[in-house]
Image (cartoon, rainbow, N blue to C red; front, side, top):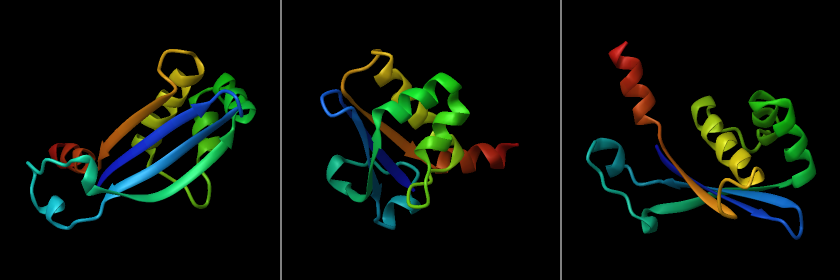
Length: 116
């Protein structure tokens, strides 16, 4: 599945929001060379987090941050959660703009697994 996560930090309200988008068309799964565009993605889910909780989790390490970001309604797979956690950390450390996008294609994991 092709996914996009829009991660934004609002310093004024001390919140971070993550919007999860996915390409829901079946044709994209059948073609390796599928070129996706912004219009192909549909909003699947949106979550918000208290900035203080996220900042505390960042201090504890990536595992703690991933645990804080995951919930019953938002549970990205581990590889994707690591990418999100890295971008969230960059936002809080001032290494990125106030919003970032993370693109994820789970076919890359499947093809790497098949090569092993």
